[in-house]
Image 1: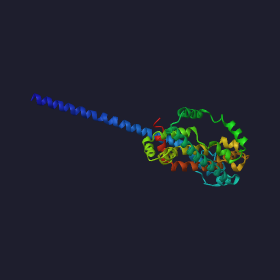
Image 2: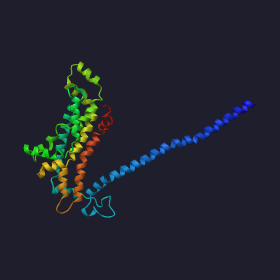
Image 3: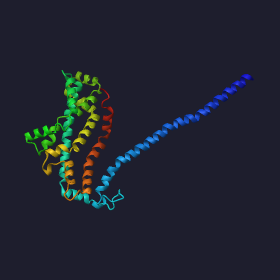
Image 4: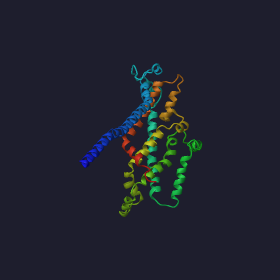
Length: 304
């Protein structure tokens, strides 16, 4: 009887302790869920705060001039009007500026992808004397601010007679960049070398390997670099401002700056309409390249 009573007492104690531990485990399980909930709420609020300027820009483009600074602010135009866009296209050659920006950004993006990928392949796979030293020196150029080379670049363009031409907008940036070369080199080093060895056994040279193996596998990194380059030169303002004088050769950012300096004051609906137009190509490119873009951000730089 004594042994049975002792066992019953032990079983009862274990049951009571397990029952008392259940609420503690439940609390520990709920704490991470509550933390995730707070994090999601914070991220949603942060996203809304980032979207508010964009919503205000789009809303202002459909307002009348007198509605822009009304108090309290009107987020929804009443009434909706396209007069801002009509004034924008009537007072300036926005279509020409848009085509100039598309031409410049596309040409530079394509050429930088070609030349940066070739340089990155050479630094990643081809062995030659002084390769690492040359690569470090090439990367060191990233530490030179663009303002330092602005005046020498302008003097060179003027000496060549390219001022106020498409050559001034495109040629200085066609032959790759240190950033693009570094980005693609890091990605190329993650590609197994066995694939290239198998291609060489089949008789493929460096260019065959580059075109048939490296480039098809590097689509995520190429898409990432393409988005970065297109975004930079689409929004570039300073260089087109100093090398272009004629109104028809201006890019969209420079043209919109001219619109904002009207002698009759800033036409905010027209200016915001131009900003909306300049935003659309960037959104389209990002949405089309989003899958490759995210993969490139994730994979690039995994191997040093």
